[in-house]
Image (cartoon, rainbow, N blue to C red; front, side, top):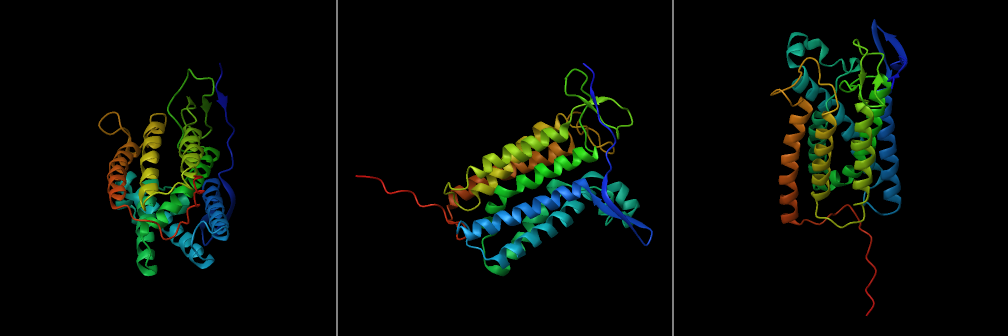
Length: 282
């Protein structure tokens, strides 16, 4: 069976020239922006329904600090984890986020740091907020992977035997490959969202839900990386693993440890209002 040959999609939705620098909105960036908007609207809805004890101002502040954490942490993470030698030689490129290059694991660290600082100022438990975000993050992850697919970046490994193999126009080798972006959109986006959303009304100690997210994301990312072409500047580590898998293994171990810790601590949420269970008939 012949592979699906994709045409070259326009990478940018729009572009402007600012003092000789090409700036614009890529599909990847637009999808993440859409994810933030959807998450913000859901938080507002939950506040109106009294599921969360957060005001509109608090929600706006949280979304804003999460945005900063994603951008700053994601960029720093990519620089350190994926292409440090290049950026040491070209430090002026570190802030060139419009040229691409973001790391989920770096963004996750950035969000945790940003929420920790915000929580200390507002006297919240940081994982009380992270538990809420854990339900919504898969929306942005799934949309972001769809953006990767439209941009035809981060495509999969060579796969000549599957009927849905695709030839990406951006692939210089023009080989049939796994559409790994769609695999990740399915696992890290749709499936992870369904699982996390199903926990919404289940009463859990603070930190357990966020830890569960970390475990599931790590497992799904490790699986999907077996179908994704490694970054060319890194290749395989230890002959078989990608950088994404190594970082996800670290996340998996940490998340399991946090899950055990928070279950033992058994701290009750001050932000989430769980639905009351109906009284048992006698």
